[in-house]
Length: 161
Image (cartoon, rainbow, N blue to C red):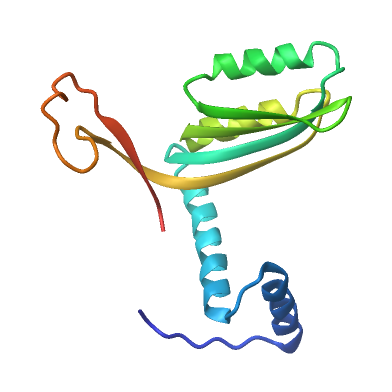
């Protein structure tokens, strides 16, 4: 680990201290590391749009909007290879919240999320992307298995630092 020194003007330091307090950071180093990681992830997604990612897409919609539920369901089925899981929550008589875990190439995940959020009747939407490296594993629980002769491996995803 390396130690670095930075100089900030007073107003930026004050704003940063407020950020740390709101987020519950106990020291500046961890807060700065998280900010740097976040920016590097963003840069990677920009530079490598076909790179693999996992993501959460959350959106609120009015389920009374004409055919919106059917359009959303059709969109998910058309992109079933990206969808890992969906959670549906009834917020009120009119509004629902869905959170979807997605996995796949960053550009495809982003385009799918943008298309969902742009649907008439979707009132709020947010996509959070984490770049990952993916590797196929042909073993289970860390050791080779005699019954794994049919290519029944599984995908390992590692967050990219």
